[in-house]
Amino acid sequence: MLGRFRSFSFVDRITRREGGRVEGLYTLPLGVHFPASLMAEAVGQLAAWSAMAQLDFALRPVAGLASAVHYHRLPSPGSTLALQADIERCDAEAVAYSGKAFIDGRLAMELIDSVGPMLPLHEFDAPEALRADLHTLLGAGAAPARFAGVPTPALHDLQTTPGERISAVLQVPDVADAPYFADHFPRRAVYPGTLLMDALASLSLQLVRQSAPLAGSPVAVTKVSQTKIRSFTAPGARLQLEALLQDIGPQRARLKVAARSDDKAVASARIEITPWSAS
Amino acid sequence: MPEQAISQAQIDEVYPKVAQIVADALGCEADEVKPKSSLIADLDAESIDFLDLVFRLEKGFGVKIPRGKIVEDARGPLPEAEFETKGVVTDAGLARLREFLDEVPAERFKTPLKAADVPRLFTTETFCKVVIRAQRALAG
Image (cartoon, rainbow over all chains, first blue to last red; front, side, top):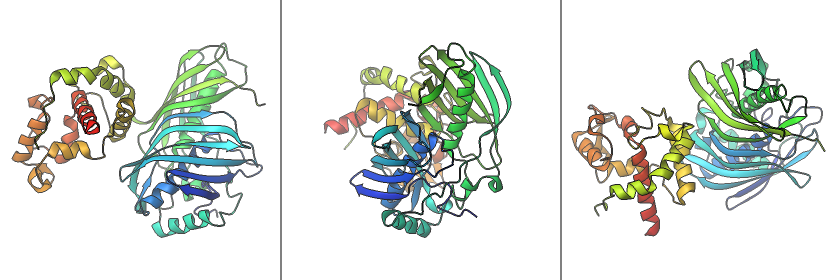
């Protein structure tokens, strides 16, 4: 069984904590797909370690807001992410930070103005266990290749109007079907906001790939902005996802995306998709 | 020291930018945001939206808005025990709120008022005043 600190932890080692800056490393396992959104998760986790330590493991941040995430390079199996986070503010209400991930010295992802609201840590994990984990990360580091991948988002009832909109129902896995719930979090399973954003990105890509003039072109999500995660999603939940095309041209498509649970808004963001060359 | 009054002209000066930031934070159209809009009752704001709004106001105006400051200022000189009893705002607390939140239409001060519902009173103009106080604090 993949236990705590194993299946959804994207910091192998913390290499520097000085002032508001924290840096770390994470090596992607071989043979496992690593969604680009998990680079933002990795930077968020790095910032969370710093914030939890600063607040003596009484509180922990959860996903909340991000002004923008820019994707410049996609991670490939086996590559190492050099992570950094700059904590602008950290108190009992929230942590505010920006951060970056580099691959081979080149900027791969930039997270701008992210805010994570604080909640009592003991509701999510054992404070002493997290202290021990931090000690490991600051020392020898965690064992490598812990991540075994995440299930492809289960999108049902897909309805597409090319050039306009796409909607689907996302079936969030049950705890037994997704090892990441063991890590996220040990005392309270929560569907990671970054995976929800990945599902919304995947839906947006499906729409753009069917919409002129980008239909048939290789495209990728290059920017996600105004991200807001409003509430927790439990294992087994069904979410209604929707992506609305705002404008599309040969160089860029812009979409508004949202996830709802019944009539309650769960998350929203804006997504930009551009032609993409893997080189 | 009693607070220096905030004039309508001062509110009007910052209002357009505050209203745009409110619209951006809540994801609504700018023309849906009115000076007397209750952010919760009229614009469906939730706690995460207030967090977003405060950070955007800080960035937009180059000010610092200490956490918990809005509710703390609303309570003013009253000790917490005199402001609320068992989670309900006292008469003295209500009098203080009516004075501090004088931009809020009088009929919205319903009794009994739960202390947790005080943010339901906050309007776009309330946040104009928050910005003006933060600017004053910055100016020393």
